[in-house]
Amino acid sequence: AQSVAQPEDQVNVAEGNPLTVKCTYSVSGNPYLFWYVQYPNRGLQFLLKYITGDNLVKGSYGFEAEFNKSQTSFHLKKPSALVSDSALYFCAVRESNAGKSTFGDGTTLTVKP
Amino acid sequence: SAVISQKPSRDICQRGTSLTIQCQVDSQVTMMFWYRQQPGQSLTLIATANQGSEATYESGFVIDKFPISRPNLTFSTLTVSNMSPEDSSIYLCSVERGGDRGDEQYFGPGTRLTVT
Image (cartoon, rainbow over all chains, first blue to last red; front, side, top):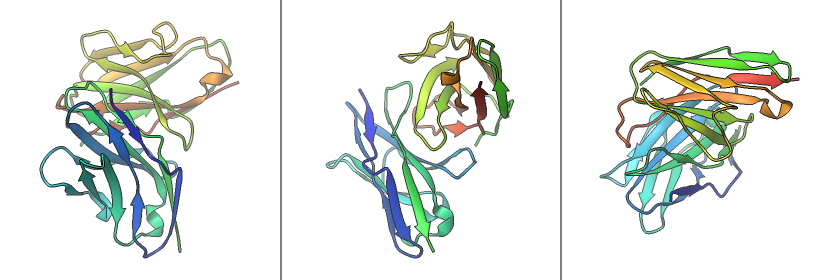
């Protein structure tokens, strides 16, 4: 069975500071990992994914995430937060032989000027 | 990427009635999903709809309440039947393009349903 946890309901950071949104997962086999973002009153958008290869993946809007197999984590990061990054972020995991992804409960990121 | 449209974008319905939500994709896709989401909350998967086969429903969701059609590779409908206020939610259509389990999902803009 696959599962994913986003331990923080909310993350608050000041503009210009680095941000981290945490995600841990549990799978039986090899994981496929995804981050999605939902801006206010807008649809969900794909940000980035890890399938295989380099543990550090880069995505849209300057975001990146690091796959850590030993810690079963896939934290989302950005070196310098923007107010416009304020949104709801979802982590998702999928076992390599699974028919669907499992989404986390979401983390609301608020970036204050 | 894939561009997804949903109709209607929102509706207010009376209890006991049914609403059919349409999902149209700009390209052929293998897998389509239907989710429910309360504003600002997590996603709940209702069912997976693959073309040419019966939809697969998640625990707590049944075909009589949420019948799904998938007549071709670019279109699907979800019907919310015999609605009650508890069905008030945002309903999202989502797709994966190629059937590769490493593919990301694309989401429609959602249908905001209010049942009175």
